[in-house]
Amino acid sequence: EDQVTQSPEALRLQEGESSSLNCSYTVSGLRGLFWYRQDPGKGPEFLFTLYSAGEEKEKERLKATLTKKESFLHITAPKPEDSATYLCAVQEGSSNTGKLIFGQGTTLQVKP
Amino acid sequence: NAGVMQNPRHLVRRRGQEARLRCSPMKGHSHVYWYRQLPEEGLKFMVYLQKENIIDESGMPKERFSAEFPKEGPSILRIQQVVRGDSAAYFCASSRGDTIYFGEGSWLTVV
Image (cartoon, rainbow over all chains, first blue to last red; front, side, top):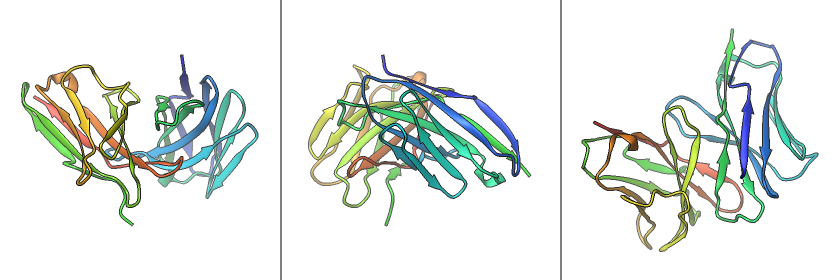
């Protein structure tokens, strides 16, 4: 069964304290791995898509990396406005139906 | 360029009533998806539609739930005879290519 596990569930950082969020997945062939940011009461906001092991993508203070079994979202020198829940999702290889399997998310709080 | 538009944002229904949630995809997108986020749970896929066609409804509950995406107008997620367990956030998404963009959600509360 396809599965996505994110850790930690919650993370508190001081402003400027870099860290990484983990997303482990089991899927029968990976079509794509997605990272989203979700603020309370809002919809998921697209951040990155990764397709193959070794791929990396960056956006401002965020950098996403992918291996054959997991993905990391690295946050460098975070600011309070980076506080949100970060969601990881995978799309199975044979699926072209937009069916994403989401993890439970990591809730990040950055204190000034 | 407007994003995925959902309405209503908040909806309160009594048990046994019907709920209708509407979704207009991003301009140029012809693929629409509905996801549900139950309290304290992750997002779960419900259904994938293209204009006038249901492509994948493997995540839809067998009873009371239906979805459509007509040739003209928004996509509709319809929940008949709502029960308290239907209280959740319902997200619509659309895509052109591999990137899937989500709307702000419709929060359904069943009292």
